[in-house]
Structures are given as structure tokens and as C-alpha cells.
Image 1 (cartoon, rainbow, N blue to C red):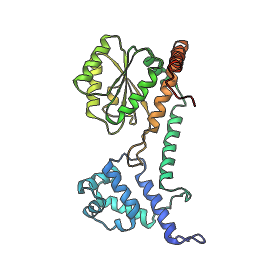
Image 2 (image 1 turned 135 degrees about the horizontal axis):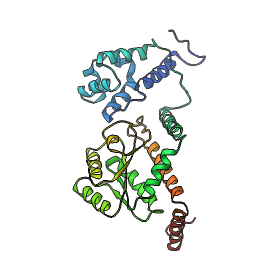
Image 3 (image 1 turned 45 degrees about the horizontal axis):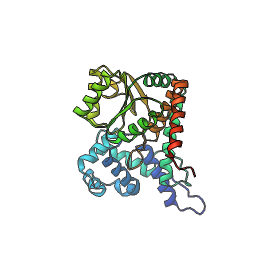
Image 4 (image 1 turned 90 degrees about the vertical axis):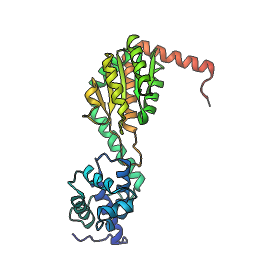
Length: 296
């Protein structure tokens, strides 16, 4: 198909926009490792010359190993690099209809737009809040309540724990793996804990799986916040709450899981009713008395 430039816009600019849109369509929806994202970013900037590369050429230019390029092709669903290169050529030379682009948006804005689409999918998935209410009630009734998060998931676990402490009498955040976590899980179960909220976001630590196995061993129920409906972590969970993780940036964005955890806390407060509201107001009163927060 021959593309006719708009008045005042050279053909090269239109072709560049079309190529980038086609490549984003090729990469969208796939979970890529940091090395694979490096390859994707190189291709977005150098697609027209990369169509002639061997896998070794692409590895050298992108600054990764040749096996990383092979795994990149496989992650996109291709049987090998030659098949991927043919798809790349199709994206560049326009044998498919060009995707529409919003030329007013730069690259970073497009990444934010992708995040917004993920949040819209999360919103739509919560059209029936039945599971969220059920899990919130179960977590609110667990004393102590355990919140588990390792590595990349630890900050969100601490945020959840910090906010939950305002309305629950005993919240324990578990962020150290191994025997220490096993000890804390065992003691909590002996103290009456019924549930652990586990946050498992990519890349999923092996120690998190081990912690969940131990939690089941001491007869704790598991609610898991994650981004994948099927996997080794979900197999261990009694309840799975799904939130998309955006992989367009150099590092994952956890806007979706953060919103889901905030919605879970909101629903827990509803489940606690007057008791939870009284605790929240008592916290605010103590904070005001101690002048914990700036007022102006």
C-alpha cells in the first residue's frame, strides 16, 4: 500500500509513526523481561535497519546476548527468530493496515495511555464486587492479619499493612523470606490468625512460593493479589484477586495492583462497619493530639 502524506508532513514522518504503531501492536500484551524490553526499545528506534539483521546482529546492537534475542522471539509467540523477522518486516513495510496513532502524544504519554487501559480493564473486572467483598470480610476477621510481600512486592505489602493498621488491632507485614518467615507464620497461626494476604507481582520470587507452601502447612488461608490467573502461586491460593501490571516502561508499573489493594482496604472498612470507623477516628484523634501531620 502506498501512503500519501498529509499536506505539510513528509512521507518519512508518516511511515515512522505507522511503523512504531505496528511494532507496539506486535509487542503489546506480552510479558517481557528487562532484557527483552531493551530489545523492544531498540527495535522501536531502529526498525527499518533491524529487518536485515541476524539474531547475532540484533543482540550486538541492543547490547544483549544472542539467547536473549531468541527468547524474545519466543516470548512474542514465534517459533524462532526467522519467523519473528518476517513479522518485523511486515510491520515495517506495511503489508498490514496501518494502526491509527494519536500524533499529539509522545512516547511517554503513550505508555501512560496503556496504563489507563489497564486500569479500565481492572475497573470492568470489578463490575461484580462479590469476590472483593468476600475476601475483605475474611481478611477483616483475621487477627492477626498477615500481609506477605517479597522483593518488588514488599513496598505494596508495607503500604497495605500501614493503612490496615489504622482499622485493625494486629497487622503483621512479612517481607523476610526463609526460616524467619516460617517462624512468624507459625506463631501467627498459633495466635489465632486465619488469613494471609500475599502480593505476588512479576518477577515472582521463589521464596514467595515457599512461604505460601508453609502458610498452608500451618493451616492458614491465602488471598493472593497477582497479575496472572494461572500459575504456581495461584495454585496455592484460596482466593485470587487479579490486577494488570503494566510492562511498557523500563520497569513494571504497579498502578493496577495498588488501586486493587486500596479498593480491598476500602471494602474491609465497610466490612468492619462501626468498629472500623471508630478505630479510624481514634487514630485521627491521636495523630491530631500529637501533631503528627502538618496542617498547613
